[in-house]
Structure formats: structure tokens, C-alpha cells
Length: 235
Image (cartoon, rainbow, N blue to C red; front, side):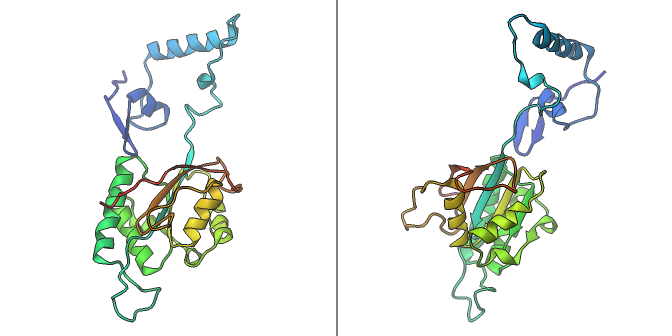
């Protein structure tokens, strides 16, 4: 007989055993006959009740519950402009930036926001940011997708990049640069969010979290909801 575990950790969130099993996580086992009987009874109530009781979560053709897609837009952490004449492409992170990036990753991990897909600019300061963030989330560095077009990209470039995200990617992290990232936030959110004290939407190490439509290939202006721009992640 299947003996349920007390908890399953799923992307940083703790779910009860029935949730984990329903989603396909946890040990492979057969539910008890009592659980099956309860499910069948509720299904009969839904289909035969004279009061037309609707229990949409019992529709077998639908997911157990809806998991919205999310886009995490992260500007690289603070770069070191005193590193000599290395050029913009090879400018590394400053000491502060090297400390901030793992803290951002740790926050994402605690919030259960470990991404399914990480896209980053290959420019040195963005590369270092992405690698340090991913290390703190236990996201393998070899899975990061490096796209040169993120550097210097405008909204259209970034939208074309997001359109290629696979349908299985529920949470996507995009690491890049201003002004492209700020323009993308404005385009997707539709409304003008409050700016920070320095007048920027995304300062170094700033993160924007947006709830996205179900289809990555259809991203119209104002299609997303800006959930939060958490402050002082790196402090």
C-alpha cells in the first residue's frame, strides 16, 4: 500500500503529498482505494447533481490547478569600470556586484522561483551575474542559454527572443542590460511603474517579476502584470 510522505519540496514551496502526487512529483505509487472512491463520488456529484454543482478541478482534461507563466527580468549587478581599458563587452563585476548576484539567486530560491529557462547576455558582467545567480539556485551553469542579441537589444529583439521559449518553460529568467530591459518592462506591463530614487526602473541588480500570458509567442503590449519589483534583494 502507498504510504504518503509528509512533504515534498517543489521549487522551494512545500506541498502536501496529494498535491505532489497529482503533479507527478514524489514516489510513484497507487493511491489508496479510499482516495479513489472519494474522487469517483465527487465526479458523480458533478455530473448528476440536480443543482448543477460545478467542480472544475475534477475535469480530467484540465490541469490540477493553473500555474501562471512568469518572466523574471534581471539587470546585471554592479560592474567595475575601473578595471582598465578592457572595453564594454569585457567589463567585469565590481566587488559589490560579485556579492549581490548570489543574494539575488538565494532570494529567488527561497521564493520558489527557480526558473525552467535562463537566458543571458554573454557580456562579461551579465555572464558573471547569471552564473552566480544560478549557482545560488542550484541551476546548472551548462543549462544557461547565451544570446548575443540581448546585448544592445531593443524591445522587438527581446520579444523575438522570448517568442522562442518552449511551452514547457513556466518561469523564465532574462539577464541583460538597460535600456532594453526597462523598455521591455514598460511594454509588457503597459502602465508606467514607479521609478526608483535614481529615476531608473531597473538599477544594477534590480529584478522585475511579471505574470505572463500562457503563450510565449503572443506577447502584446500590456499583456503582462507586474507582480513586484522587490527592493534591496542584494542588501
